[in-house]
Each structure stands twice: as C-alpha cells, then as structure tokens.
Image (tube, rainbow over all chains, first blue to last red; front, side, top):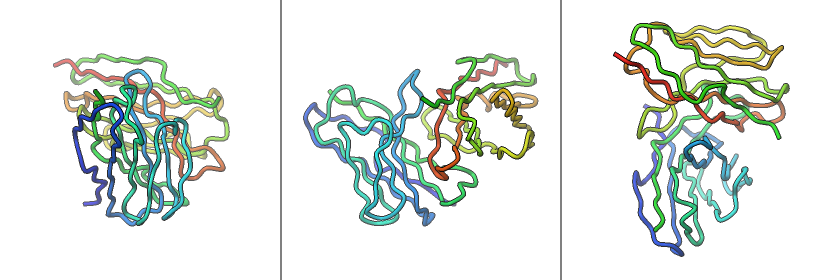
Length: 114
Length: 113
C-alpha cells in the first residue's frame, strides 16, 4: 500500500525553537508539498518541490523553509517557531505531469507552539 | 486572486438520504478537479476526480458534476451513511500548473442516524 508518512502525529514546541517536520513517501513521486490547515482557512500551501533539491514557495512561505535532499523525503523547517504557527501540517506527494488521483496525503502533524 | 470556495460550510443529513456538496471555482483555466474526504484526525483522501472535458463522472455511491458555464462543481453521495461524516474539499488544477492543487475551504458533512 502506497504511503506518505509524517514522522510525528503531535508535537509541542516552545517559542523560538527550531522545528523539523519530516515527510517520507514510498511511491517514487516527483512532487511533494507542505500545507497547513487551520479552521475556516482550509489548506494553504507553504512550499512545494518538484524534484530533488528543487523548491518553490507556496502561498504562505514566511517563517518556513524546506529541504529535499532525497526524492522520498521532504522536510519542513520552522526556523524560529512562533505561536501563530500552531496548526495542523499536512504533507502530500504526487506524480507529474498528470496528477491522476491527485495527491496522496500523510496523516498530518498537529504542532502546538507554546 | 483565483480561489476555490464552497457555498455551505456545514451540511447535516439523515442516514439514507442523498447528500449534495457544492463548490464554486473562479479560474476558468482549471482543467482538473478532485474531491477529497477528510475524517477527523486523518489526512485528506481522494474520492473522485473529473477533467474539464467531462460534465459528469460516477464512482461507487458518488457522482461529481461539473458545470463549466457557471464554474460550479458538486459532489453527490447516494444513501449517505454515518461513515460518510467528514469534511469534504474540492480542489482544482489550473492550466499551466500540472501539479499544484488549489483547495476550497471545506464542507463539514454530518450524517444523523
């Protein structure tokens, strides 16, 4: 069964900490994505990557960075966590050029910054 | 800017009834649409998709209708069951971006026994 795995389901971090959220997919997908999901705002794209070492900003990249050193792994980095980054973070992957069946999502990481 | 939105944030139905969840999109260049279901504590899961050269597609108990004239998308669930209770998102891919989805804000479907 194909999978997108996020390393943590729940995280609690302190303001100012550097936070790493890890995502691994076993489908040999080129594209990987990080979204955050907040009530009333839906899913908002933070960053995405369409190849190893490639990355593009999404709609809300401020305060975040990403790393894609290997095809199967896409990491989201909060350089200095703030309380407004408390959210559900979803990783997804897909094929290119056609996204038949769209994205495959991980189960999410619920991050609380205190 | 371009957006994908939903007419209703919540929908409550009786078990066994049919459900209709609506979605409006604004990008006329969008050529691929997907419905996702997200259960509590889980990531979104693919339900059904439709391409812009179609106006209807059916799956198991689900039908997606696309009206490009008014830029409207709907998801119909037949004989709704308690297990259908979830948040449903529509999403679109616009021409020129084969892999970047834009999501609507979601509709919470509650099925009453």
